[in-house]
Length: 161
Image (cartoon, rainbow, N blue to C red; front, side):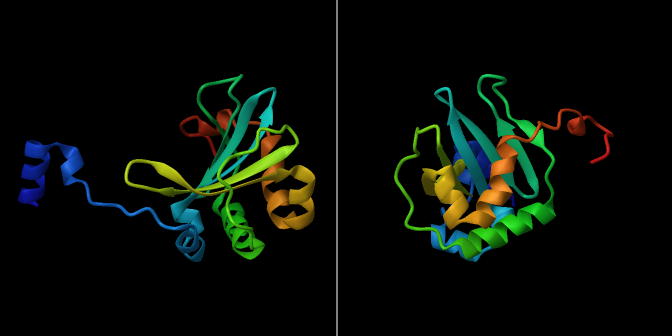
């Protein structure tokens, strides 16, 4: 313990941090998605990307024309577990390199906790009708969150969840 503290003081905190390996998509899907993988569902509206981020039973939505910070959505671990099952059962195709900018497309990204921050380990973009037809379980869980009202008052201290 003293060596770790001494290393942090002498060399800075970067040298004292353990080397975290970014998991592969296959490893992430085989493990506990709820605890270790951030799910991002997005679409483009008027040239700006609206994003829903889900991790550990919590969700938020970022609408860039309204705020720089995401707002919380009503979400819980049960919904997150259902999403995990749907992701594992979906048998998604090979990941794509880039996100689509088409307004009719929806994009799904899986991000894993990497050495510095969450990093994309898989991304898929396709028209919303294709998502609904080929991956209905995923689409039915994710799409309504793009329309759900942000839970403004649920984040107040002492407010019931």
